[in-house]
Image 1 (cartoon, rainbow, N blue to C red):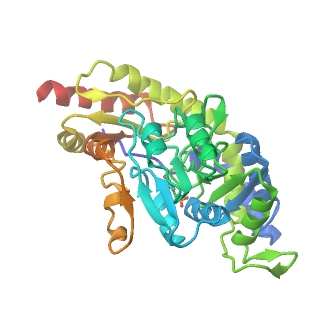
Image 2 (cartoon, rainbow, N blue to C red):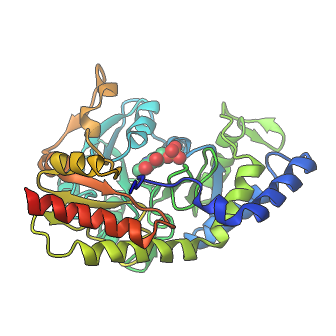
Image 3 (cartoon, rainbow, N blue to C red):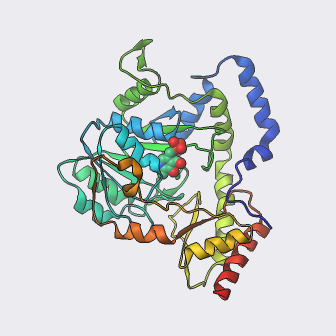
Length: 367
Ligand SMILES: Cc1ncc(COP(=O)(O)O)c(C=O)c1O
């Protein structure tokens, strides 16, 4: 049997007729940007994340950059972030000319360690970026928000992977002064291309974001030097179709994850992922002793896995020649050597997950 890591086309396969009819209508309408679908996904996102405003963007990478800009981050400002994330978390800080300050993660939930964060904040800290990783909300997200508030520092939430998740009754996308979502093709709600959004409750920030995504325009006049980071109406319609069914998508992901939890329970060499109160299981990331050998064995048996993330952001080449600061990152360093992401998507079959688990068990019995 062959098990890919992910299937990009599962939603389209299940909803082809409906989606093709929407595309036909949009293509015939002549309204390709700034239309009703963009407004509808913005409204829907604001509803899901319990925010006043959402602004759709061309990607979450842009969303993060616009959020930092809106929070006033500029050349030389220090911005705290975890070293264990996708490179876009770092890119957006570098695009502002700011100085990244890396603070360690928890070895259990893989996100910023709240105590280390508290100790790392200084008067030079101008923003904190909280990454909600692998389809979870940070278990102490309210504590993280309190740290930011106590120090009067904007909290930027990178909730790229966490749409629909909840912890302490707070949905992902709610906790940041500005929060960012991704619709990259791997995400729980995904574009057939790219897309993202920024969320805020502040009217002035909303006005700024609207300008940034559309050439600086306000009342038909460019007011600032902006960008062109709109989402197309076709993408927005495809996202809306998924947003309307995304509770079902999360339930299906949860069923798959439950299967993994039960079938992999009791293998000493494997630590199963911690999850928040209401996860979306965007990724199913185990920690495995002999991770690299296990990965090779699975590959030999037709199973594709990935490593999120094998290189810490603090060790990325893009930092060469740039100023950055790092605290003790022992947990993050250890975690990169052990994490392994197993295949997961909404329509992965029972037989496929069974096969993955059988192969993992076979590997540990043999070794
Ligand atoms: C944690 C995190 N931040 C930011 C991004 C960037 O999102 P996008 O691909 O929409 O620009 C991603 C996407 O893959 C991500 O996983």
